[in-house]
Length: 206
Image (cartoon, rainbow, N blue to C red; front, side, top):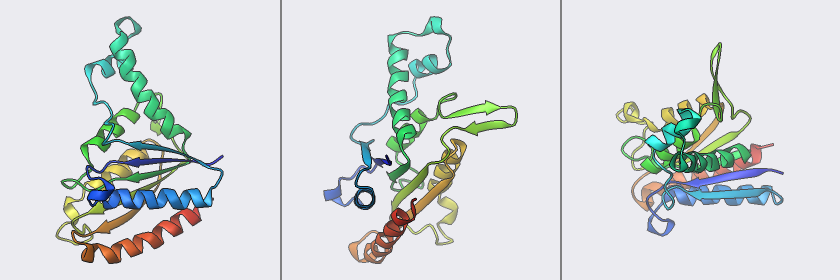
């Protein structure tokens, strides 16, 4: 049975102008329509911010068993819950706006929790190997600036970061659907294109 992991990370609510939330909801709705027997897990990492990497997490992940305690067990357990959600998904629909040229802090916290040696990547003789291959990630991205503009392109750390981390974890099928603009008038043509791109993206998934 097909399974979608739907994540939002905007600090804005849908009613307060969040374009990335609007797009991710649209994607999830189209995916449900195409996969009526499929299942969806939804997580809002702004409403429920993942733990930051802490000493307890480091002890639990890297430390020997004798230094584990209830705090380290809880820290690792919280990360394992997020990892399980990713592993269960065939498709990840991620609403990720551009904040200060990169991703929201809450999304970065989520990334830090799902990157765990032995669980989502491993080291082999030939180098690191991702353990999450075979999944598709669709990034529903909104930004006030157009990073295809040569003046802003060097400041785009958002897409390279996401592609780099996901590629490291084995997710190489990564699609960006982007809307740029600050006013409804500026946003309208981009939203129209994004709607078509979402339909095409969902329709292309086997």
